[in-house]
Image (cartoon, rainbow, N blue to C red; front, side):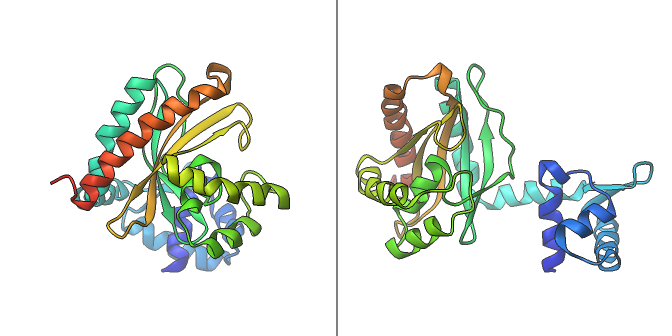
Length: 246
C-alpha cells in the first residue's frame, strides 16, 4: 500500500506526470518487478493509465471520480473555494488553499488563478512546511520546539542561517497578532506571497489561504492592505469551519 501511494504521489508531480517503468522504479528505489506489479494492479483499477505507444504511465481516470467524491465529503474545501475565487477576482492575483501534509510538507489543494498578475500554480504541488508566507503561518501556530526543529532540518526553497532562524522566530508573535504573514522575493526571486491561517475548533492550523503575485507589480508597502483583506476573509472562513458564525 505504501509503495502504491508513493507511485501515485510521484505521478502527480509535474516532472514525473508521464513516466516509464524504469523512471518510476529508479525514483522510488523499487525493483522493476515490484514496481511493475503495483502499476499493473493500479492500471486494472483505472487509477493509473498506461500508454502502449510511449510505454509511459500517468494518473488514471478513476482518480477524477475519487477526487469528486473527496470534494463532496470535505466540507472545508467546498466552503473555501468561492472565497478563493472572490479574492482572486478582487486582487487579480492567484489565490490558493494550502494544506499541511504530515509533519514536514504542505500541498496546494485548491486554487483560483488571477487574470492580471496571477502566478500559475498546480494543485497537488508539494512544498516544505517552512516555505513561504504559508509556511510562516504554519510555524507561527506550532509548538515552539516543533517549529524550531523544522526550521533546523529545513529542506525547502531556502536554507536559513542561524541568524535568519532567530529573526524568523522573532516574527511569529507579530504574525499571530496581525493575523497574516508575508514574503517579498526571499523564497522565490520575483514572487511575493501573503498568507492567513484558517483555524480548527481547537485553534490549530492545518490550512492556510495565500495570495501569490510578482514583485515587479507590487510595492512592499502594499502587502499590508492585502494581508488585512486576506485576514478578514480567513476569519470569516474559520468562523464557518468552527460553527461560530451561527
